[in-house]
Length: 463
Image (cartoon, rainbow, N blue to C red; front, side, top):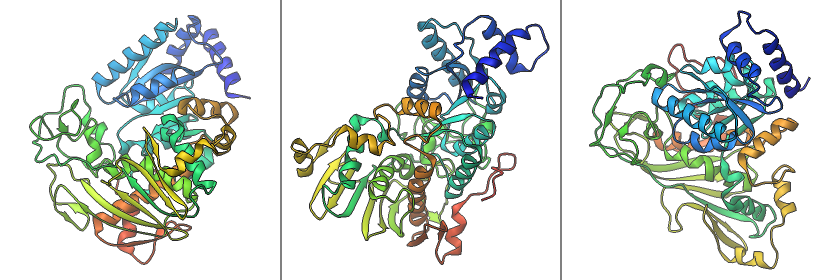
């Protein structure tokens, strides 16, 4: 039975059971079915996490699905989320009740929902994604997908077991004028000869200075927000330096990126984009690096890899990491370069720079005479037409194939980023066995492949 025929049968059943005593999710679905609000052959969407990044995600998702539930541990975000969904669907002539849930598990328990978006802080991505797959949902999850290398292995295992369709939100593989897709095609076609060096400039981050303890904002469930992370006091201060003018410096909204407890700093925030493209171009998105070493400046003193202060951002502000890849190719992950944010590819027969806004260099000029063709791009794009990341996700749901930003390649790219963070935090060179997915000859560093998770929020997948 197909998913769509199952959904049609479900809607018929809920309509027939009007008046019966049913679970909480069925009551909402029944009302929608009786009101003829849902189109049976469209996917039914639940949104977990409704902060800033979600706005773009849900706008794309609603072109292919009908949303019936939003979830967030911040009540104000959740209410704005429901308002946004109701407004978009209303403009499309759909009067669909949108339920609100603080606990994501209530979204996953609903049998009418077959697709979920996960747009939460990074430290929640893996657990929710694993629970979603086990609940039979197809998943679109924002990057970076993982907090540790072990989490990537756990997600990969559950994906193999459940056979769900899973798209990671690394949109550079699909969009940005197709600049990065063209760059990958150029490398794979040997347009600059043998690649020797790649520089991924992903920018630096912010030193906040001291952030004072503060009352938890009304409507924010701080316990649930923290999840597997250590239980700590809430911190927020308008006097401290934030990286985003919309929010003050804090431990939570948007600014969570600069705390190792919840993310990996710029190394995983933008590394998830540029290191991913570089790995794809080199063909190491199925294997990995050989060695990783580098230096960094942190906002506070680090001892044995751990920050010695808890009142300020602690992820690296600046860094210079050298990743040796198979074939003696050097990949540099830096916070600042003369070419600016983007990727510089250097080979035996030329060099070029690619960013979200441009492609520059003699090999780019040569494309006028010998362009990258649409067929070239489609071959890279797993036989589908590139151009829309969310559209690719729903196209793959229909034919049950892997999307362009699949879990397997993303895990390998994030492994490089996580290793880079481990190297700069411990201050030493790491040798990586890509087949065994272990750091060679360094038992202490291998402890960093996973992290202790707070009781009650553990991920119960053995790998």
